Length: 435
Image (tube, rainbow, N blue to C red):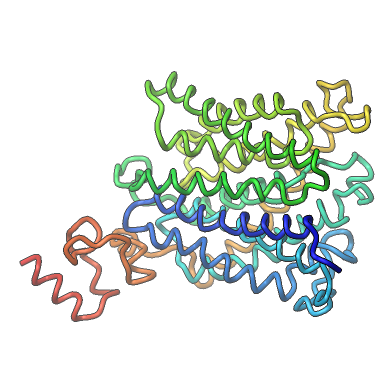
C-alpha cells in the first residue's frame, strides 16, 4: 500500500507525542529541588525505554483484538509485532506506544525527591501492563466501555477522544496512591528548598508539551473538518486555562506567577484531551477557564488532606481529567443533529456514560496501583533512606548532579553523604577545594 498523507500525519503526530515525554522531563525537572532534577528527568526517560519494549512484546496486543472477558486483549495475539510486518498497522502501533509512555511518566511527579530508581523501573512495565493496557482496551479497543461492551452497551458509550480516562485520570489516581504509599518528603510544606529550582526549565517543558499535544489530540482525526476543530480547541482550552489560573492566583495570592502560567497551560491541555473533537471552540474556552480555576484551587488539597504529591499531578491531571471528561455530558456537540450534552438538549444519557467511565478508570487504577506499589514497597522498598534524601536523590541513585559550581556540586558546597556515591578521587578533590 502506498504511503498516504494520512499515514504521514499519524507518523508525524507520533513523533510530536514522543517529544512530549522529554518535554515532561523538563517540566518536572525544573519543579524539583536542584539535587533531584536529574532523577526526575531520568524517570521520564526510562519510561520511554521500558514501555517501548513492553509495547513491542505484548502491550500493543493487549489494547486491541480479541478480548479476554472484555478486560484486555490477548497478549500473545501480536507478540513481538511479527504479524504486523508488511502492514500499515505498524504505524498505528507506533502512535499508540507514545500514549502509553507519557501516561506512566506523568505519575512520577507525585513521588519526586524520594523514590528509588530501581523500584520505579520495576513499577513502570508492571503498571503499563496491568492498568494502562486494559483501560485502553476497555475504552478504545472494543472492551467493557465501548459501544458493544457490557458497560458501554448498558449505559451508553463514553466519549474519550484522546485520553481523559485512559491517560490522565488513570495517571492522576496512580499518582495519589503512590504518594500515600511512599509518604511525605522530609520538611513537606515547611522546607523552602522544596520549591521549584528552575522556573525557565518548567516553562520550556510546558511549551514542548503544548507543541506535542497537537499530535496527541489531532493524530486520530479522520477528516479535515475534525482536524481543524481539534487544532483550534487544543489552542483555545489551554490558553483559557492559563488565564483562569492566573486570575485565580491574582485574587487569591495577590500576584500571578510563571509557575501558574505553565501549570494552567497543562491543566487546559488535560481538560480538552477527551473533548477535543466533540466541543465547540466556545465550549473549549469555557472548559479551559473552569479547568484553570479548579486546578489552581486544587493544588492546596494535598496540604489539607496530608498527602505529598510533590509536583501536583493529582491537582492537574486527575482534577482536569475528570473535569474534561464530565464536561462532555454538558457541552458535547450533537452528532447528526441528535444526542449531545445537556446544554444541547441531549438529555442526561451522555453525562451518565461519562460518569460511569470516570468511576471505572478511578477504580481500576486505584486498586491495581495499590497492589503494585505495596508489593514493591514491601519487598525491595520504594523509598530512599532519609540520609539519601538529605544528600539528594541525584547523588544516591545516579552518582551525578545537575549543576556543578567549581567542582563542588549542587549549591557550591560539599554534600555530607556524597562519599557513599562518588569515587575516592572526586571526594579528595572536593575536600581540598573546601579547605
